[in-house]
Image (cartoon, rainbow, N blue to C red; front, top):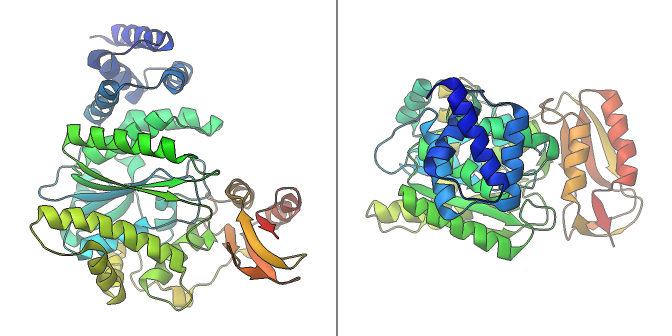
Length: 418
């Protein structure tokens, strides 16, 4: 098929989807091929995204779309048990990946974690990890890293894995939305491309999450499981009610420090972040142990690996092999950015945290582009606050941004205090 013919076929497929009709594998493959090779304009790609958001996909279409995304990009092949974890997202300050990867790798399983940068949030896992070590590598280098230390935390955007998805994300970004089906395909394509066969899926649910209702979360979970079966991936779904960040830091550097505190078992570590990471790591290890004919309890093993220091040791190995300073520690953590403490004008209990406003304020401060920009939540849900006590701290390398964020907080508060 020549270039012009490919583009014409892709346009016909978009027209067909706009009319609400199902697409064949060949039509979907042609579309993904045109998008991944930048032969389709952003306008035409946006029409496809809009049509998909309106009509959704059948399970067969989801399978074909995932398969086509994988086949029009590069792949990483590993043998044996290959574990992975992913979250549908929607809340900042939840860097469980940086804790789960070293736990699973220390347990003896491969976990090549390809992470994204922030799309609509103040930090993605790749943004946070980049404050500790480089995250941009070639496919061959990623393979070497995983074969040497068992795991990695790297950016997926530089390796040509499911490249059509990266283009689609780019055109979605200005509207700040993704359809549920698109989230499923985006995640699964990257898992298939790196040989994942055991996956734990974190689905946070809440009024400020990507998925707001448990009924929607259950439907999404079932689609993941059905798609997983088609690709030979065992998928465990963790649907959880989420009202606030699991950690206290929001922004790349602050979130990385939260993860370090958990791995180091620091006395001031964010315990909710630790609990969530252990739960997800435990579920993932359960299915890995089962297929490896090992009679072990996943969460118990995860707890042992974390509290014994094995996870920290493994994380330092990963940091070193990725080219970072393996002696980095939260004990010597200092922010170079300007800081402004925001005090409460009243006493009471923290009844609600508005995650939309939290994300917006963090972005005003410069996150995720400015790695040290962000927010540290001194107070969290159900905690008491006194009048004139510090609620949160704002960080920015730009004093103007710091002042703008402080002013914006007056109209878009993060806390509801009763």
